[in-house]
Image (cartoon, rainbow, N blue to C red; front, side, top):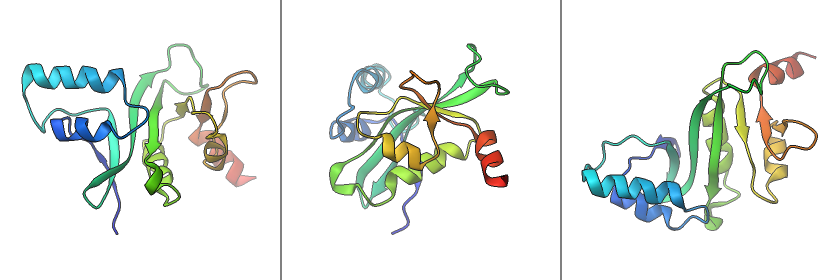
Amino acid sequence: MGLKVENLKMNFKTIEEFKSFKEYGLEELSMLEELEISMVEDNTTSPFYGIYYGDRLAARMCLYVREDKLNLIPASEKYVEIWKLEVLPEFQKKGLGLLLVEFAKSFNLPIMTKPRVKSQPFWKKMSFVPVSENSSRLLWDPNAVDTQKIS
């Protein structure tokens, strides 16, 4: 099955599919309100990306490109922030989370995320490291990864 990451169109069908995910919350509700006000279907781009397994939304994440105003990442003015990366239970262990993270890495910018409880091993496998000793936020830096490969 040719699985691929795609930008999710904000329409009533997508919002309805989001209700299956644990991380469903305020962002989706505000998008739903915007949709109801504008009643524009299928042409509103969203920060959500997902993978369909057959005709079912099986995995999704929210991606934002942020300015690095706090200088969290040396030598980078921008970074990608991953929110709400989630794979539905029946589709876990099929590589969908990996596909989503690889898609985010394709921007070739540092990636910041605040992982959910018990997901640390997944992020470690993806070469994410804590931003600082006491931070719950994790970072993937394409420049750091390259230097690790060389040595």
